[in-house]
Image 1 (cartoon, protein in one colour):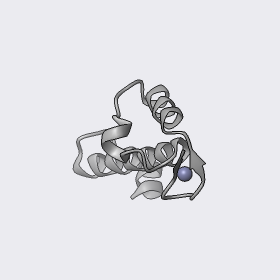
Image 2 (tube, rainbow, N blue to C red):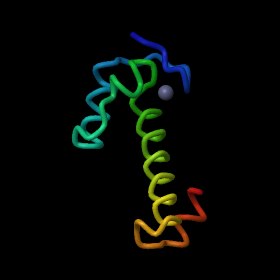
Image 3 (cartoon, rainbow, N blue to C red):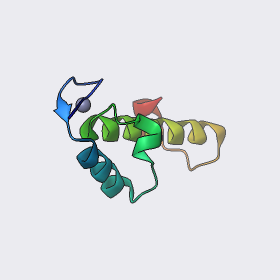
Image 4 (cartoon, protein in one colour):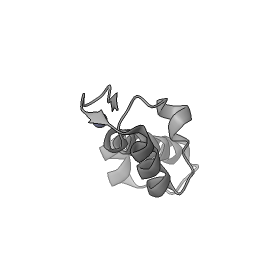
Length: 75
Ligand SMILES: [Zn+2]
């Protein structure tokens, strides 16, 4: 077992990897991003906030349709 460096609970790295693969259909490489140090739940919430922040920045740059609610919430 590994201990999550965010929520400090013990977790199974294989399960965390599977959870991330299922959530993002393999688009995000759990091992590369988290190196087995973050549990599935924390990984997903961190990836989600990164993705939402990235989209908010693209909206500010005009690369994506502007959504004021999204920008206010995530930027
Ligand atoms: Zn965690």
